[in-house]
Image 1 (cartoon, rainbow, N blue to C red):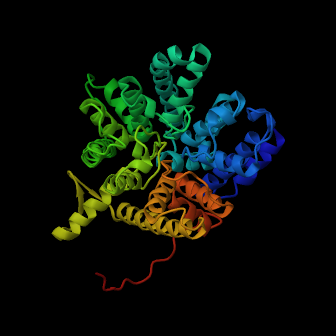
Image 2: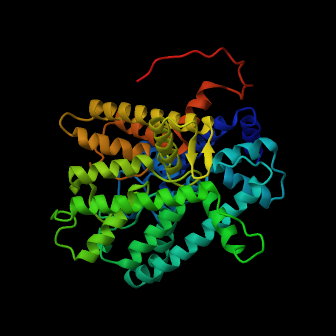
Image 3: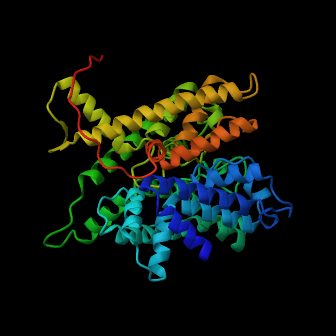
Length: 458
């Protein structure tokens, strides 16, 4: 344990954003080493470290992209390691470590509470350990329920051993919005008409992507509804729920209308299957990565709407990526405020502060900028005539949002693979967090104020 304590002491010198970046990078490297061991391979031969690193990054960043078939390439040990990486990536390394500290009855320092607050998007350092306990409790309960439902279908199909493992694997992968599966290149296409599989996966993806803060608030509200002083749903909870549900419905309508007569996707399916498949595509596009409709078969209109859904992504403090639902809402409200020439950016009977708007704008601009750079790099470093602009735009957004939907066959040179790992890393941690971590070695005091001036824009 001495090397671990030395590493933890070394980590204590860094700021909260830097700790998050370093911890994720360390887990990716450890995962790559474990996956490259012979015991992780189904054939007993060690995997190429470049493939192991790519797969580990995809797991920790809950993206779900692989360069091989998991069921054929990884042994049970390798699959278990991959699933552990997905779980750590979904919960956040600091959440896991704080729970380890609590389990061995060690004190959680103020610095660690601050980092955990960054991971869980909670500003209350006093209650953040209790929130972490809730996060772990919610995760275990939801994943077990999902696994039980999936086992109803998988056990008769694969037998008890493989069926139960497949149920657990896909439940964890879905809740963590990872999109890894053990079903081959078809993903869930073979279950396009199966309501149990579709709605169970959609439910897991939705609950993992709505955010742990929302789950905690919803649970407290449900438990105290009949009390004299019930817990109220917070503004954040109501906003995240309404935006998420609205995006799912609008996305399903847009994808369904675009693909209704496409013979390669929805065309020829019964109308009920078309509706269910449209809903599944809309839910999964918001950072999950499972599919019942092949992404490369989508028409340009549907691909556009999928890119928009991937860009917005899940909610804050969740297992998903993207700019986040509340970020998109804040920007929309700010635009409305500018158009109406209002004094405040209002949401219901509350107003959003300038700091919230500034952070939302920063995330939006950085995400768009990095997406455009990644599109350029993918088209530049990919083999000539092997990737179209539409595919590059789709896959770049899929990587940045940690969705994992791919239109190509992942035959990329080493340079593109490195770019993809960096994109997944930035997308999972958050571009703004990474830039703050790079900009300063330590947390600094607020800078002195300078006089204001005007700059003509627009």
